[in-house]
Image (cartoon, rainbow, N blue to C red; front, side, top):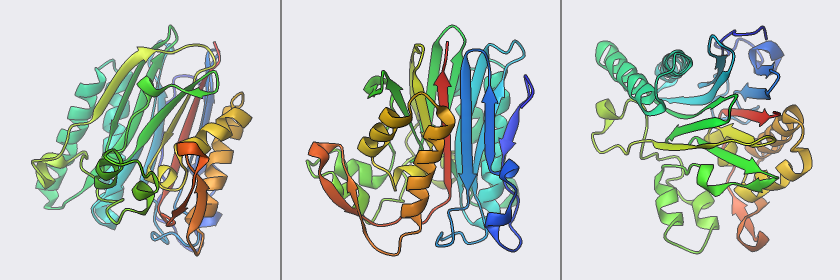
Length: 299
């Protein structure tokens, strides 16, 4: 990727076998003197409930001074055509506003306004969830997330909780009130989100997003994923993979993607390791689109 270039990875509608889509349409990589970024997006495999569609986007860009990096994943919803258009529009708006210097919360508001306007004009019901980061060369870090897309931050190969977001769905509400972590992954409303871009058009009670600010340090890792990742891989497992591949953003991205993809296409319930006392839990395959972005700060 050439310097200052802004990229949105969004595979067009698949014709024939989705796995034949060139890797260039599914992978984004970028290296600067102070960070490396690797991302993958995929329709979810042969058992995905979206057999010929990828409704996710991932985006990556830098400002004109090449000192600020913006990256994110966006997951569209609201029917095949509407979801694809919504995720593309939201990605473009977020990328444009964030690389232009707008505050994270205002960039999300603009993306929400665009999706809402588009729903009104086309009389459709599109929506999107998103997980986005903006980090500068001097370490200033902004994180924004809405819906069941999520950002995890790791420092010295440990989870940095103050800079991790939480999923906004009904299953998370139940999980937060219990001591039984398996309830989250097996909850029947796992896919029922409580916050989304386009919320004003769909539901006036939609929650606002989650916005965090902090100072990033050298060797910090940020993992952004759509629900296709976080419904298949627990936080504990993500942490274990970071411990193995924390010095290589591409290897880490590939390892997370491989584990999530294998579970996404499993024909039966799974047994996974969970953060709570390493307990093993049953998990229903998500069979969703899958998008991951890994950012490693190298200086």
